[in-house]
Image (cartoon, rainbow, N blue to C red; front, side):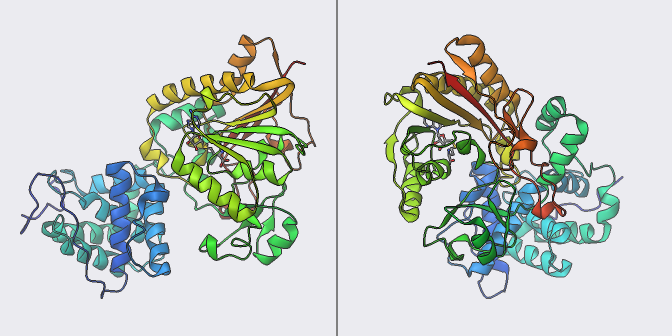
Length: 458
Ligand SMILES: C[S@@+](CC[C@H](N)C(=O)[O-])C[C@H]1O[C@@H](n2cnc3c(N)ncnc32)[C@H](O)[C@@H]1O
């Protein structure tokens, strides 16, 4: 069969060299600047390895609603990138022209609006064609963009045939691993949750019911507050006053496994941007927060200042940290973060299987050192926001097998409000994105986290 649409001979093209900086489209066309920013963001993530949260250029002056729209186009494109790429491959049987930098991002942004957003098709197509035309990298392909996106508006259903509705957006290697760890049906449920924009979860200093009411949210079984349709976080009541901070409901659990920390010396290793430091400090611990990233530590300090909480902050490699000994240590180790794909869909394109090997070796080094920082009788909580057993269960089993001075202190039903469904037979905590189904997917789920509690023998 002949390819239905071929790249037109470009009128002007950028040549095979590196992409030129895109020309900013005229701001006069409503909605165009938001699309341009979204495409820039896609380029940042797909070609330059930026994280979703850093991908939108903060210096581009844009109305907050347009910025929010750009973010939604970008995040949804990444969330559905497997499906979108499969469709584009069907629409362009000869593949994307090699000499067309940014063309894929323009098509991804357009197809996202057509398929997954409440944008009229003619606007989604027209704006993407305008965008392609306004940029010297893609100007010669404006006709192709028009043809491909128009055909998508007409034939989406037929084109979807053969593209897995369940697994197309899950990287093959991740899906295979989750099937092995959790089974096919649970993996299907995890993948379904990854397609949905998650709600905003916050941890409040006090009185969750009051804040749930003020923010039109709900109190979750573990005490976090969940808000749908939050809008810009900084504009919400209580943010500037330091009454709460953003923290997924699952991420709020590991610190609570340390129990009553009032007056205890606690090391929070790998602490930035400080969600767990804030929990520990708010609970009355004397906290030493260690992280090796100075930029992330700057965010931690900013957060603590806003929250009017204090911690002793140390910049450096936690595996070499020599403070203590401590009553308790929380190690929220760097990991593949595959448990956070709902909030960070860029992870589906940025992570590789090989990353797990490097990260697991780092975690092994960190957890062994974390245990050395404990006083006799002290408690260690180890956590990761990963779905991979190598970064969770297996780290703990290996440490316990190697160290006779450590024992597991199993989590007991009822000891932390709402935690019971997540306690494993071994007494650890394992949450999955498909847990906590509470009606619609948009108000359900939580990040995939692992946490274990160990004690150093007295
Ligand atoms: C999962 S994040 C921590 C999130 C944090 N605990 C919170 O609740 O907000 C992992 C952190 O580990 C830090 N990190 C990575 N390797 C490290 C190392 N060797 N020593 C100290 N910090 C490290 C990263 O900079 C990152 O901030």
